Image (cartoon, rainbow, N blue to C red):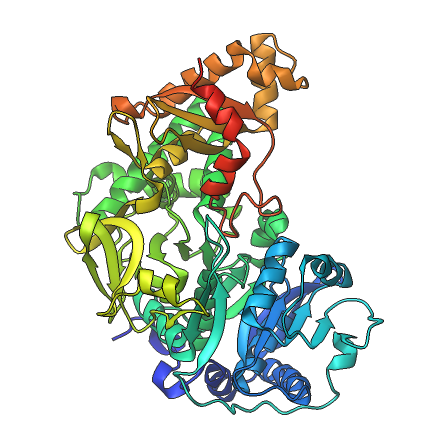
Length: 595
């Protein structure tokens, strides 16, 4: 039984039946409650559930007017906001299949998704984004393009204002929970993305099962800043609040995240590790510049905060010193957590591995931080920690009705009601990950300790050195990026005699280091100076002191050229595209082994 009282009122997922069924039930239960908050013309505005249902009705009428058959694919390429949600729910209510495309995706990649999915309609933000797609080939059977901003001057292209009618009624016409709801193209780290086929039931069940692990109340407020095109944000940051009746504020983007956190003051945050990693670096840098007594108080807060967390988890005893923790939290932790809005009662982290040191920092400061695990092919969540059973270095406990086991080479295999039907028009790729018994082969190496599961590596990412030693690169890369100097890291060494790395440096910290070495930070050649490499290797040695001897780096290549989604070197969840990076730096990597 829930301990959250009357303010906990989730809609039973079987009662909803389909994803738009959630909106129908929610608008009936709490029509006047705030559903969404968004920034417009310098102010934050609210929409109630009743208002959302009305706007979904307008989108539904516009889509119906296109004469699309049930099962037709429609694509959305917008920033997070009410129109993304309204388009999605309207299309799903009509039995259409939604194809989300990352707003900042490369034009060639977005064009591939449109063509491969056979999308008949595209809702895109601007005319410039639409024009950028045109040079990249025939765009399938695309019949209609709708621009959210600006005017159109093409028979096939309409502005959103002209496309939406004045009147429309919301109604759920698709009542089959097993129907295909979405084709989500994975932002994989190698090759062209594959279209994951997810049903209403897949995502509806996943939202309900995740909410059962981390209950959400009617009083909660989410801040949505990860792309809704990513299944983690879509299921946990959009469908789950809809199921639970919580409000969602749509952030203005990653660049305004710090300001939005303070302005919105969310109670729940769904994030990827890199956001917490960057915050942790900034916190430690700031404390490092304070007087020594302040640093001592900060360290004491972390030590006692962690002891209190372990005590609450039943893994440590108390100590009389814990009586000082409320004071330390007020004086030391609160100013730090106020930068996150000051009201967070729950932070969910997924999409990639969260470094244990980062998790420990925030938990010690008093932020309830839960790491989870999943993949698009599972809708996406398979496991998550809970407030009562939280082991921050693990990915948690399986969701209800999820089965996990280890296959050959300790690969994690999964079964759940959220597992996809397969990849769109790709039977060969489907057969490679879904076996005859229905087990999803995740490609991740895992271990189970007690009730909790741990991800220890990625089968395809394991680096095998010339001496046979196997090195999982992600842990080492995370350890490197905890150094304030190192912004991004790529570990290399497959088939080589030793490990090396390509490191992207923070410009400010590089400038400080260069001055100390007698180098000109503005001269590109300074990055290749042996003094710079040796100075960075010394810092690397310190960062990796806890790793085995074979994990030592012998060479590094230094650069200031950041890896981004725009240049195709990062996924939307900020994971490195290893294949593309190795291709980009092929000659540089070879040079690291010629000496």
